[in-house]
Image 1 (cartoon, one colour):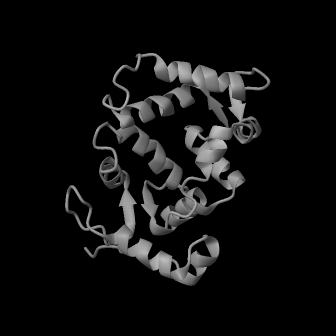
Image 2 (cartoon, rainbow, N blue to C red):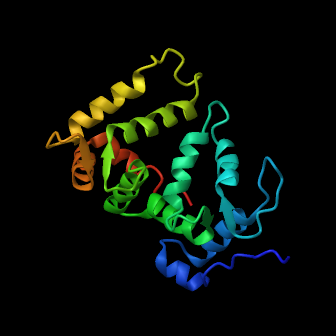
Length: 195
């Protein structure tokens, strides 16, 4: 049986759909197709499954367990929900995260937190993401962290974001709250010219 190889959309088209130059896209594509670091499996198909994504992501957070957060991140990149992140999926997400407008970045972040994709963020969804972030950062990062720290973090966020106190955060409430928070706005600009 022949291996099905994923062919990236024409670079010109991807260049038009993203905020990357043709040269940057070529460099990113080479990196995307490189061997997977831990298993040394080749990833020349141009498509990454969730297990490979988790494996690659774990390289960046060796002090903690990034599995759950990588799962949420994978789902945010896998926009067509087919269980794989194509090079196009990856570029479109990365383009938003690195060079998107504040509005685009906040929409992407909302999508990450809206785990079940129903258009609302619940406390449970936010708590799942927060726990995953704390797990990923590891015990050495937060050695004296109390067990209920993620829940307290979520309660604080919800008090700020859930304007009408209906127990869920809408996209409008999320964007409005984030735009009023100086720390969030500063963090949105950190990676703007990384590549």
